[in-house]
Image 1 (tube, protein in one colour):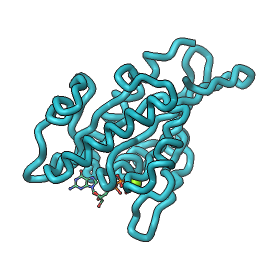
Image 2 (cartoon, rainbow, N blue to C red):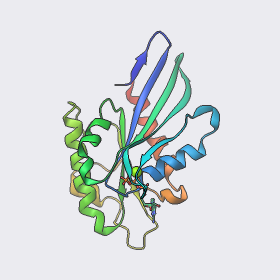
Image 3 (cartoon, helix red, strand yellow):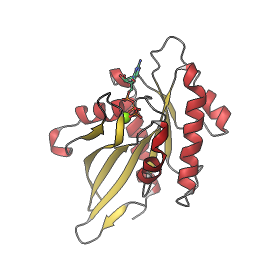
Length: 193
Ligand SMILES: Nc1nc2c(ncn2[C@@H]2O[C@H](COP(=O)(O)OP(=O)(O)OP(=O)(O)O)[C@@H](O)[C@H]2O)c(=O)[nH]1
Ligand SMILES: [Mg+2]
């Protein structure tokens, strides 16, 4: 559920970019941040290691203007994908209103994508959320790789639907804005004031 401040008439949604290590979550966020005009975005905060692996999270706030007299804000986060940060990943999902799962299209990353997705579902369940009903978008990133996995192959393995899936090349910005548009539409549609 979004955080609603009735006094200040503000609604804050939390969007989390989830996925295995090195799939391109930070690259997505950096691109979105770059595309937005200064008036609507806050500073991008990235906490990473020297090798640019996300340590805790990346974050920036995005002001989406007014809906029904309420100021709408999206707080955008990424999680750290590296295996040993499971506790941080679970924590980042607390209070989330939607997740974008950034998968790596490299064939050798297939099982890693599946494992990460299943862990995400477990983590959502730990907050009493039903992952099959939770607003989520599946982005197949790195479509520029010569041997990219087929769109739909992860969904078949996971037994989930394919309606909110798209391809992307985050390093070139391809599919990045489409992904966040799909996500925000879902999140806002689910919400009733
Ligand atoms: N070929 C290709 N490389 C990409 C693409 N998107 C991201 N990368 C590269 O993949 C690497 C990892 O990208 P990040 O955005 O840091 O990945 P991450 O998911 O945030 O990784 P963690 O923070 O460790 O979980 C970088 O070298 C990116 O340049 C893409 O679409 N195609
Ligand atoms: Mg990262």
